[in-house]
Amino acid sequence: MESVVGVSGNQVFLYPASDLAIVVSEHNPAETLNQKSGVDHARVIADCFQHSTVLPFRFGTVFSDDESLRKSIRSNQRQFQGNIDKLRGKTEMHLKIFVDDCCAHSLEKHLPAEGVGREYLRDLRENASRTRERQTRARAVSFQMHRLFMPLDEEVSCRLTDSGKMVLDVAHLIDRKYVERYQNKFASTSAIMRECQMQVSGPWPPYHFVHRLTRGAHTPAQPLAAHAPAPVAQPLVSMTEAVPAMA
Image (cartoon, rainbow, N blue to C red; front, side, top):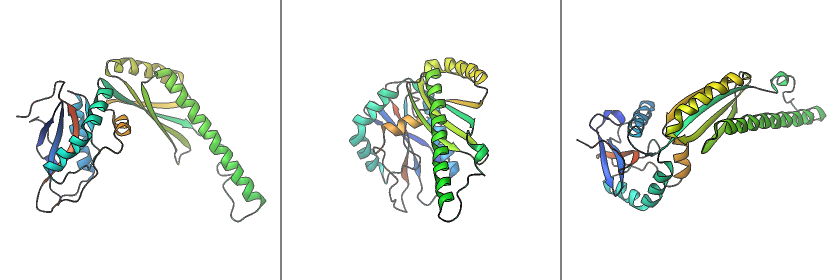
C-alpha cells in the first residue's frame, strides 16, 4: 500500500491477522485529530474499498501500542470475520430527499404562547398533532423509497430545516453489481416524484451498516504515552480478496 498515506500523511501499514488485515498508521499523541484527519481516514477507507471488503473502525480509534491492537483484534476476530462475510460484495448508496413541510403554513400562527392557560394547552396539542403529521409524511416517503429501490437493508433519519423543509437521509445497502441499476432507478424516480427534491451519492463503503454490526466491538480512543507514537486503526480488510501488498 505504498501509494496510500494515512492520517497526517503518515505511512500506512498492514497488520495480518488470520484471514484479515488491519490497516493502520502511526499517530503522535501530541497532534490533535481534526477535520482534515477525518478526511485522511475516509480516503484510506475509500482506497481500500476499491480492492476489498472493508470494515472501517470509527474515526479516532487509537491503540496505545501494537499489543493493544493485536489483543483487540484477537478478542473480536470472530465477530469481525462474520461482519465482513455479511458485507462482502455490498455497497452503500445514499439518498437525500427534501420534502415541503406539510405543516409549514401554520408554524408562526401556532407557536406556543407564554404562560399557562387554555390557549397554551391548545397550542401544545396542535404542535403534537403537527409532529404526528410530519412523522406520517416521513414514513410514507421512506416506505415509497424502500418499495422502489428494494435495498437489502436501510437506515433512515429525518430532520426539519430552518427553511421549512423536511430532509430524509436514506442509506441503502445494495449489491455492488447493481449500482448502475440503482442509479437508473433514481433517475426515473426523481422524474416522477416532482413534489420532492432528490439527491443521490455513492457507491460508498457501507458506513451505516458497519457501525450497526460492530456496535460495542470497536475499541474507543485510549490515553497515550506522550513519548511514543501509537497505531491509529483505519479499515479492517479481508485478506481473502485482492488487497495491495505492502512494499
